Length: 68
Ligand SMILES: [Zn+2]
Image 1 (cartoon, rainbow, N blue to C red):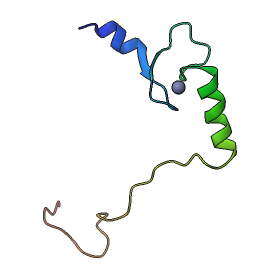
Image 2: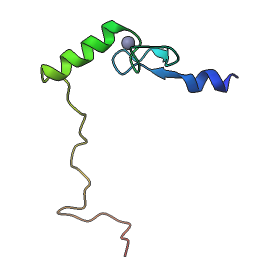
Image 3: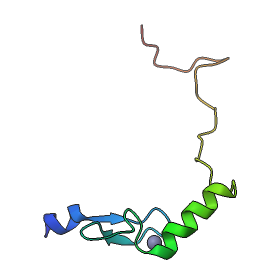
Image 4: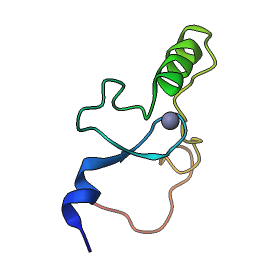
């Protein structure tokens, strides 16, 4: 088990490919392609932060496990 390698390898935000940040001009991306793609997605409003559905937010009905 190589922990050092696991620490230096980060998943590319675009394609999830484990990529090294060491000497990587496109970090955190794996390549220029992914970097450009991500930037393009941002500007094209296609990239959105995944939001969790408001189901259990304690609004309306209260579930078990009251903290107080
Ligand atoms: Zn990538």
